[in-house]
Image (cartoon, rainbow, N blue to C red; front, side, top):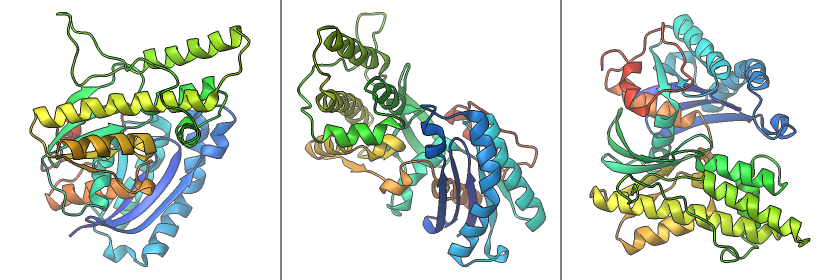
Length: 348
């Protein structure tokens, strides 16, 4: 039963949490969204500097909220990959320093593994094997979760991730950043059948389609051309209907692939993770389809869909319980395949 102090600084949230296995004692998240909104996306250098200013206070607040001292902490975990290098280095340096000063085991955690573990925080009885649908701003993948640290990617996007597509379409519609929440809100008032948009099938050399891979760049381009044509014809842009049609297409596309993958691999549970897991359209479509096929679908609480340190601590606790620790020479990686997770640990 490991108690972990975890740090997450892979992008634009400075997050610190204290987790005991699958129980969250504290979770502090300082979002930088207001700072980056004026630029329409995350500015890496600004993100790194903000992490530097915020990290010490976040650590203190996490300890205070959990009402624990360092004697009760069994290990220090940090996100080390993938992410913005400068931002990752802030968390890594803080984590290594705490590990040395307080003589605690150090663990580097893969960010995507954290998103897989987010569902464990609300479903403590969940155990592998299961299918993870990971949908975020940077990644959209179908992952066969076989055990702690043992993953097989069965399908993924060939271009834009789902969250990235939401942000780009929001920009086309002049809705600001981030795009996911505002499109979801407007979609509630629009007609999801107003426009037929492409789902983004990935062609194979034999003329068929890859059953689990997807594409969102064509969908984004279709929305662009639709808006341009409406403006050319002098018609008002029905933002709510376009938002609803776009969200419907993304949710339908993700649901079809996830259900087909789970059925073909005889996996009875689909656990969804990442920022897009908060999307109401995806939740509705996937839940209905799973029920129709006698599958179980699990979504993390909304507070654990976006980047947070609790999911990093949960993954680290599982690794530490299995005797896995990381070297203090561990570096950060802007990209690292999920299949390489075990390379982050000693004793694995």
